[in-house]
Amino acid sequence: MIEVYEHPKTGRVIRTLTPLPRKAGDYIYFLRLNPVPGSSLPVYHKIGTTDRPLDRLKEHLRNYKYQFDIDVLWFSPRYSKYTTLRIEDKQKQWWIENTEWEYVRNDRFIIPDYVKEVTITVRKDYIIQI
Image (cartoon, rainbow, N blue to C red; front, side, top):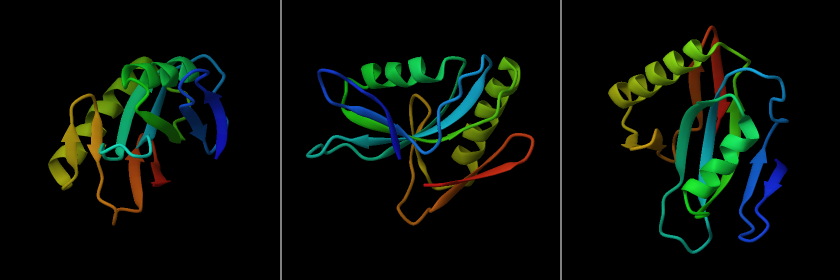
């Protein structure tokens, strides 16, 4: 993974498999939130939308009070705002209704260890290795 950001005071990092999108537009993302060593918090997976990828990831660090390192597992191609919001809601609802994953508020899921990949469908199926 490529480290794209390290918080100067806390040392929490944002890593990604591929470079972050730089073109203007709206994107869907899928993240793994890894708790800091020694923490009793579980590993969360999060789906969301943004039009400012790096800024949004930094917001996540701040909002979770620097208790997690963030691994970006997937960014979608560029879509319209409406499409990204619709797909996020549909995907979230499908996971809640059709999987045994534990849903935690703010679009987070605790995914069991035996799950090795996740499929997100936009206009085609994107298979994401977790």
